[in-house]
Length: 338
Ligand code: KG4
Ligand code: ZN
Image (cartoon, rainbow, N blue to C red; front, top):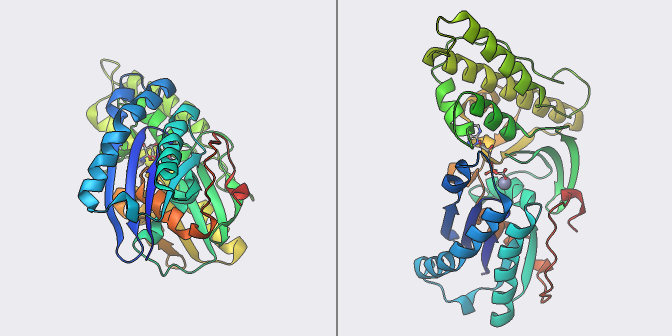
């Protein structure tokens, strides 16, 4: 039974996890840098890499202790090799390859989005393949035709902002700190009015999406509401209504594109992953589509983590190599991983 150590450092989460073929994830350590980046309104790449560097060794010690596994019993080390921030990726790649070299273990380079895409399989091995994967995160919004594990075709993409980015940028307009998606979703739960913001490209024939126009539309809406208020400020209920309107617009587009992809490919299994996949409103809307068989990652593995990288490593164990050359790929298409 194989045991894989996975390392994730592509953006602002430092993660290490151990996947055991017989029992699943046996330890998972995650350090989020969000409190630091919050001060700047977004991820500062240089600070991200320095922070990964200062935390990662401690996480490694923690995980060995928690998993009660000797490093010598690990069969392979998988790590995120891209896409992501160059310096941040280098920290994970350096630790993974130097550790593997010292232990004489093979390494497996994992595409970050493949990690997300496979994460729903962490607690459900019976998802039928082929399936349609919808990766909805802060950096990506991609529809992928999963022909088999390792063979992916991008069938839809955002032309500009990612869905998570649209959540974060509109949240910022409502005074919510980065990354605002989760907090905006909480506000939206108490919203009463839907201002019917535009749902760009919802009815076009392609599977592509566009979310950047939503920022301008939200900005215009905020100004209009403020002007009608006595002291030119948003009331708390206005913020909730705007949040609801934003959330409805984004999630309507996502669901419509998934439904379209399913009809075009004649595949009804849809696997949703990435930070936005934890959104309750999105899940409720998908639940209404009984023609789709929808799967999600466990809630704690929707956003970036190393459990998904360790698991992806397990699925590609055959490709593990004793090649310790570091070659991170900040830009890397999921179509060209093999
Ligand atoms: O997958 P992830 O951790 O990072 C990337 O690889 O980009 O996703 C983070 C994104 C952020 O934009 C965050 O605001 C969004 O996921 N997010 C949410 C929710 N939870 C996280 N967006 C909407 N509703 C949520 N509940
Ligand atoms: Zn991610």
